[in-house]
Length: 284
Image (cartoon, rainbow, N blue to C red; front, side, top):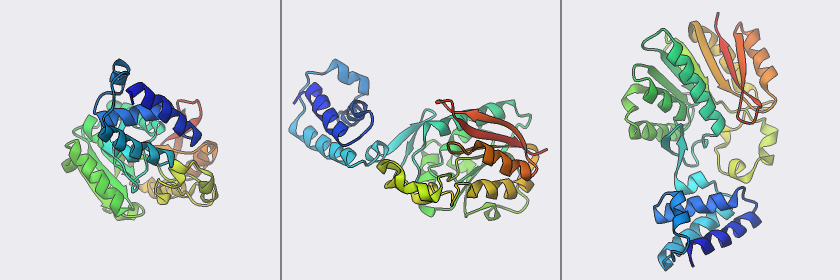
């Protein structure tokens, strides 16, 4: 079979299985198997695949048809230009979280402190902590995570990008796991925010493959926002900033939770689809 034939047939197969953007998915899988940039496929439509290449590709396409996430099949994801390992132990970073990272970078670039102290709560793959450590070499970055397995992935990703020695990883369910006197100029987090009862209705790629603790925000999805609004209040330097990702329709409730704990709400930033997605709040 030629490259073009493989793309056409596999696209039809994935479409029947309910996979979104099936042609893009097969092109990425095929580029992975052939070890070439995806766009190079368009210059080699008539190239015939070997039997060995077809066998490998069939296995990967079958997994994708069973709704295993593409990122798990490939073993990595690009986040803010950095390639990161992902697997079933960590949430796959979304584009919305890239936007959170960019807003955090903009804030740090304006900050007077030459060595800001940062906390990434629920670090997962380490994506936020690693981007901030890479872009701000003088920053003191702390990453907190309740899952030991996720922390192992985050550490490998940090070492991969040569910032492992500059990120302090902490294991625990809340800020009590941190040193008593530790305070932060910036808190960033993409906490679990899906209401428990809604998880069963999520797409199979998320419901069956992302770790449930990274999704489950309690009965109303707001459990971790209450925790952070309370526990982080005494952990911030004067004027310290919190930047948190939240779910669809949660903006008003999250703002109220933080306002009630004395935070000053600065903005509800919109994501790429125009929905409110990121809370920016400060301590007076």
